[in-house]
Length: 168
Image 1: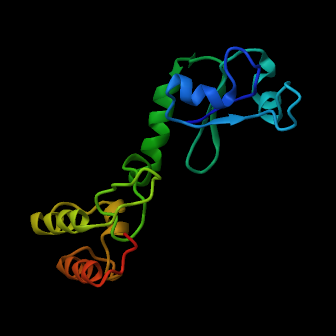
Image 2: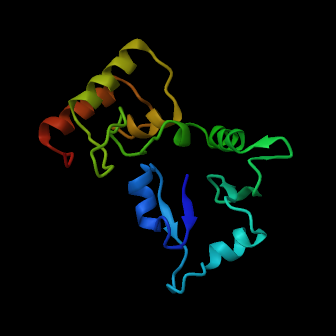
Image 3: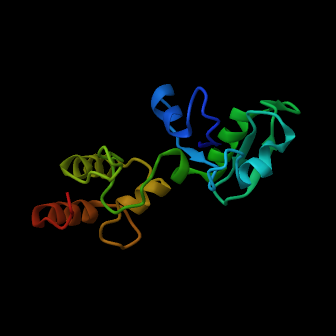
């Protein structure tokens, strides 16, 4: 999710939207030349004179919806976003970092993965319980790079942690 606009000056600037409104997604400033009349994004989407304007882009960077209507032809914008996430699969829905060792998906305040003993314990629990290995765990939990997630990966992970092979 992201927003795009340009500085009309009143009551908000692009920078203040994020802070003042507590937004959790980025706002792109579309006034690259600073003349106050928008840029390419405004020309592409807002010339219809409808604000806001909704564009849904899937994980393949294809525009799958473009309209100023929240319910365009019965297609609710949120259901279109959910459909795109489901089509993407595990990598989009689970916030999978695809970084070896990032089994539990925790991150620090700068969104860098935290790889620690908790990841090892989660991996051990998954292997011991026989839980189904999804696409994300196949990427993050296969520490031995043998195409399997099993007890060998638990041992490999423990060794990497003890030897300090992870940055954190």
